[in-house]
Length: 419
Image (cartoon, rainbow, N blue to C red; front, top):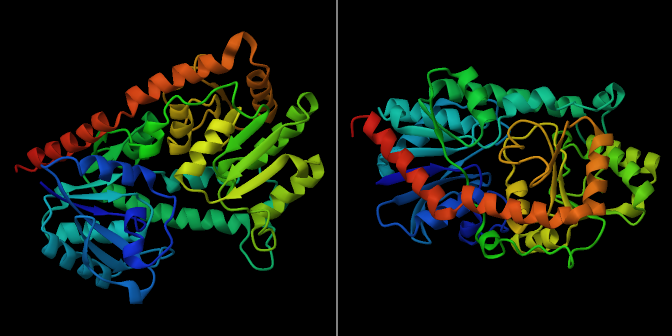
């Protein structure tokens, strides 16, 4: 079976081929690729977006044929030229299945139009990652109105960022309405997709984590972690809910004054002159006197992420909306106790009080309460959460099991199309 993957990034394994910096993103796609490479019945070729015309090329790397297309990730729609370009790629690759990773960019719609022109639209499937058409509705949660409209000298206001999400959401809705098959992983994304397109065939498939997380599964130890430390995987825009965590932190430090928060991803505080959300976070940090309690780590690779999970006393996912964040799955695979906002599909698989705590996203007082409970570790709560989390995630996200489910979906799609 020949499958063409349309990706939103150049996968890390191929970064050297294009002379670009290896990035830490798209781990779930890389994980699936590595697992399917072990099978002899699947031939995957890949299609990557390129922003620099000089890097446009087709070729072979790591045993895979790849194609590239010139892409403006901010484009609100696609044009006939992009459709024709994808038609040419389809003619060259001759795929049995077209697997599109993500919904929100205009090139998704262009590929679906190309598939329609080539008579293979019913053999195209979109893999739901997030759903920006829904995320946009939650973008301003907890942000004061005057801050929503505030615009840094060199950047956009938070309100303007929300509008960009809404525009990408229109691309997403158009694509979901066009396609027959969708792959998702939570009841939340199933409900959302079914509302947009009641006729869609929804296929459930979990995601494969990055290789190192399987190797390091269950290695978190309460005795070895840094007590009263919190790890957060991202805080770069409002739906990640870091503003709520800051309010919770101001409460936590009353009982645990040594608390430290470590944040992976871009340091938005350093960019507060051009990043309006960073400006707001900095304002809260000053208001609550939290500067000595927060460290931004920058974009870190797989090995460093594992180290941060193992060092943390608790992992917190304070998002205002989320599907099923891979960072949470990674944390639970390593075994760090987790406190998670009850939003979207983020809570999927968590048994409250047995392998994690859940709380309403806009209740920072309750978030602080549950962080404190983890820090107190009464009745060995931390190891109970840790052991139960690891067992569950290993069962749900076993690499072979997930890859097998993915291949079964491909076969089902082909059968429904009469192949």
